[in-house]
Amino acid sequence: MPRPILATIDTSALAHNLQTVAHRLAQDASGPPPFIWAVMKSRGYGHGMVAALAGFSQADGLAMLDIDEAIHCRELGWSGPILLLEGFFEPADLEILTRYRISTAIHCAEQLDMLESGPVDCPIDALVKLNTGMHRLGFQPGEYADAFARAQALQAVGVLGSLGKMTHFARADDDPVVTQAQLDCFQSITRDLPGMVSVCNSAATLTPGLASGLSASNGQWVRPGICLYGASPFADQSAESFGLRPAMTLSARLISTHTVPAGEAVGYGQIFRAQQPMRVGVVACGYADGYPRHAVTGTPITVDGVRTRLLGRVSMDMLAVDLGPVPSARVGAPVVLWGQGGPSVDEVALSCGTIGYELLCAVAPRVPRREI
Image 1: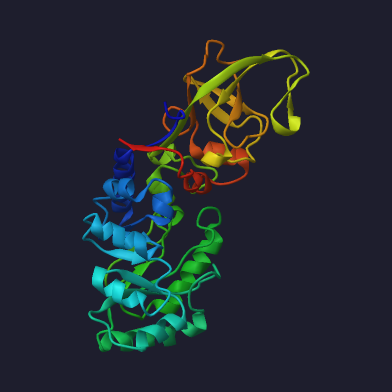
Image 2 (image 1 turned 45 degrees about the vertical axis):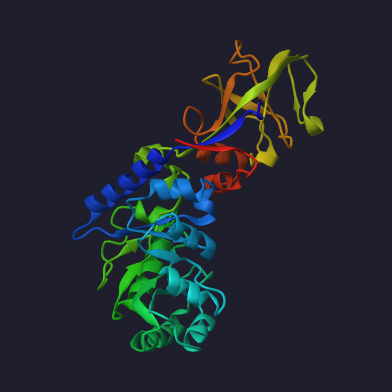
């Protein structure tokens, strides 16, 4: 039989999370609610493009990084808007954008240079990005008016189609003062410029009223990502508290059980030592499957429906668990590393000193995936 490990992707949970976010936005809006770009970076945050597309079939648009993933979505039948969040990288990309009707972010002068270098078959929709303090991508505040004017000139000659304005928040998950300063910067620079606006990531989308005062002549688009997959962008608020459901369940089985004598150690480096005789189970999951090697003893895991803990250092293909709370567990017992019926991916990430995003994206290709 195949090695007993599986990532189960619940497309109904993806659809539920999208609907939940849309409902929150509608309740919060004083006018028409924002449109939603469902963000599908990194193969749908590790869930797979096919599953993510099935779950987000009712989204207003899709947003991603890879032009090949955008093409794949078109080939799978998606006919709605698609946005490349990093834009395009070379002049040859422009023909693909026009052929597949893909929208683009414009965040640097070099992209404008490429657009100005030659005609295109049909206008490309675009959002011009402003750096409001993230200092990653985007035109500086003093450069933005000129960049937008160049984009408008390209629009006038049919190279660009609809134009919008966008930015990205650095601390929408933990610092409203910084976020408001970024929002104020965006407003002051873009207020008199036409077009749609897009500023909200998951944390901003879930924060009531954050962007309700934004002016937009063509509407507002939000860009939720991690929350659509059933994880939380906030360290102090669970996904469950927002009514979100985990879309990925990483599960495995026990492949061995044994008793470790008092004083003996478990695993590489012998970093966990039994204080008394204890039953230990070995699970068919390791860091080559995407489970974090830096997970510490005590990281939550569910065995046979009972919550227990990781012991010692994670190996390439295996990890050890404490079977004290599960005395009846035997070889073949089901194990949930995270997801439905187990700890949330955010709980596991917190124990590992990282974030749920990393764990979801890191599940290895060798782990079989099943959509339900």
